[in-house]
Amino acid sequence: MKKIFLLIMTLLIVSAAVAQDRPTTPSMLQIADRYWMQPDVVYGTANNTPLKLDIWYPRDDPNPTTTVVYIHGGGWIFGSKEGAVYQFLPYLERGWRVVNVEYRMASNSLAPGAVEDTRCALRWIYRNAKQWNFDTSKIILTGHSAGGHLSLITGMLPDVTPLDNRCYADAKYGDVPMKVAAIVNWYGISDVNDLIQGPNLKNYAVMWMGAMPNAAEIAKSVSPLTYVRGGLPPIISIHGDKDDVVPYTQATRLHDALSKAGVANKLVTVKAGGHGMFGQSDYEAAFVEIWKFLKDNKVTQ
Image (tube, rainbow, N blue to C red; front, side, top):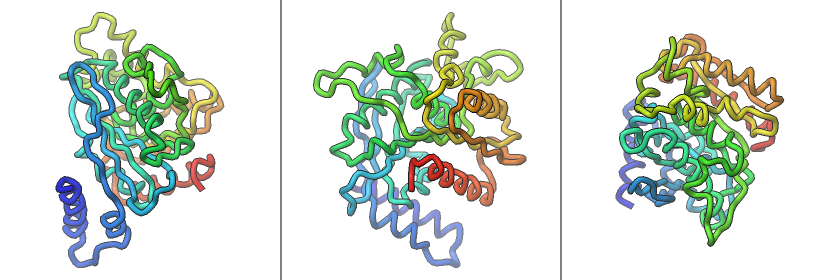
């Protein structure tokens, strides 16, 4: 409870610092008053590492609700779930549940470790939906940068690939359906191979692959573009056209491939936008597009 209190107080302090001459907004007070958080739930173990997630839930709503699975960014080499809390406040404001997922960094496990982890986390969410009142017909994956990539690959992988081997079998639960309702991709990577060689080479991607002799093969296996096909969940991407960390072409190529396959999708381009850190108006416009996209595709009402 101490950790929850500190998080809520931090949110209120930051809000006050930004606009000291204004009262705290009703929506911020609603989040502080309504939400509880169950921290560090272990959803699996890999490479001698406990894999943890936090569950944010409205204490006064026992009914199953839309559930957002948030995956933090950091190029697969740094970052933590605790540092990403502010990113999913818009979903808490709508009264939804949020599952905030941690996964292994490259310093602990090279690719495809992070993908194995987020797939295991999604499977855990389905298996424990009844206990935590997750509406399994309304699971939305989202994340920023590497978290955008992990949201895409986690929701786009077909069932029973080798990337599910760490958590596929379970005598207690058996297997569960893994089709999510939608994916909200914030400037995520869609083609890992493009970033480990050639003109778009990025150090963070090279570090995730390490010195593995079959890096190109592994990169292809964890690239969302590899799995584009009909029947995927609706996907909306938000990407700045001046992004120098994750090239904008990662978004345009994904958009084109999804459209060709007949998958409902939308690319929201932030003009002159870099790698996140968009202006306030750009963020507001992006969320207008997100809410509309989810409603148009019958994910939410």
